[in-house]
Image (tube, rainbow, N blue to C red; front, side):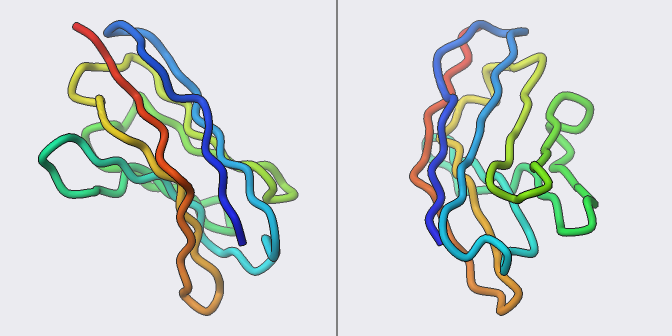
Length: 115
């Protein structure tokens, strides 16, 4: 399984961005799709995830602003980020976990929000 993230960039506070992650390989074995982020000097944190049944959850800081989704074929999953704030500045990573609890990571994509 290989993951490729895209969609990062530099935006102003209040703007929106959409991150996408393309999955190649044995994607039918994936049960959970997730986005993590790591800000400078901080630990990587889970931002949002969605499971095979469509259930999603979010870190408190992004609730109501970010939406995680995936297509039915599980080839692409996305993170729609609205009302971005400078505190959202981080490298964002897509992640997938298969039914055997093995995890896969994409290369990070930088999101920078200016005030």
